Length: 129
Image 1 (cartoon, helix red, strand yellow):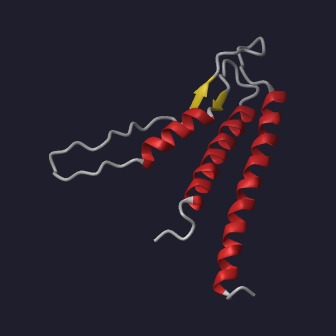
Image 2: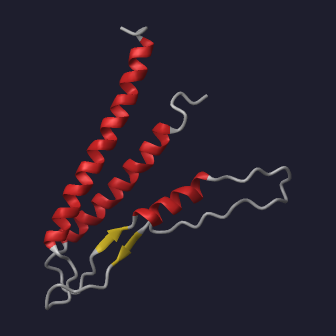
Image 3: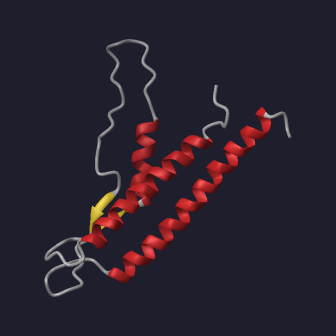
């Protein structure tokens, strides 16, 4: 029985995306002075595609039926080929800071929704008071 009808699962996947994006941004900022470092980014579309693949499971009536194949990948993380400095480094600090702020807003919005769902459940458990 699902209490929230999959909403919590969707919010969880959104938080996973935000955490993956945060890691990529943190790696980029940490390697801003590393020569020939290629900046990493996270694609929402590729991440969503990967999440859809893992969410689908095959209904098998016989053991000879094949299950859906799920290819594990980088979950939408890719390297950019742009170079912003003379040492071959591809990190643009202004862009990384803007991505960091955007990701923080996205994360806070998702956490607010999860908190709202759990507060609703708590209200129901208390009998509406």
